[in-house]
Image (cartoon, helix red, strand yellow):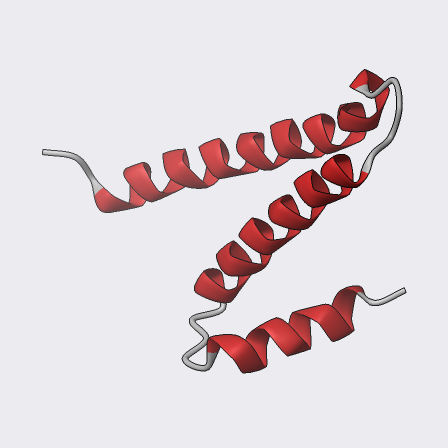
Length: 77
């Protein structure tokens, strides 16, 4: 039987590696584009939405819309 603490640590490590891979893909996304189009902006928007959903989940937010507004404020330029 697996130990919960060991499994949690393994999953934490794997999630950290996934974040590193995602960051690299986001950085390299533009390098693979010859001519930037609105479709590429859609790719970035979709990625942003998925990451907001993950962050909302990790924060245990009960009001997803309110949390999405908060996240938008946190990432605003």
